[in-house]
Length: 108
Image 1 (tube, one colour):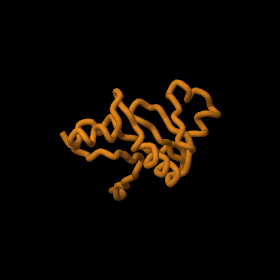
Image 2: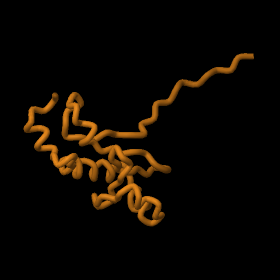
Image 3: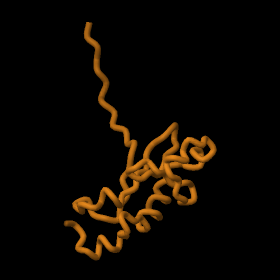
Image 4: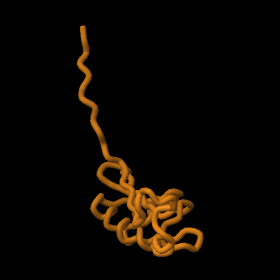
């Protein structure tokens, strides 16, 4: 008796949003992630697990133990992508902005 194995299914569970090119070594510091959560809901996160709510307000990971606050970070995919694209140009790391990194020569 042979069991037919179904065709593998590819599922998108994360999008990376950044203003820096993929080849830039600083990109990891200036990238947001839209990650699938439960059902059809998604979250906007940075690489440290901090989140952004439906208004683009920063929510530190330490605060995500608050269930009501956690719910404010769940949103439909289109809204999550909109928030991530709006916030990405404003990211800073170690006092540098996206503009600073781009002005320094882009991909390094």
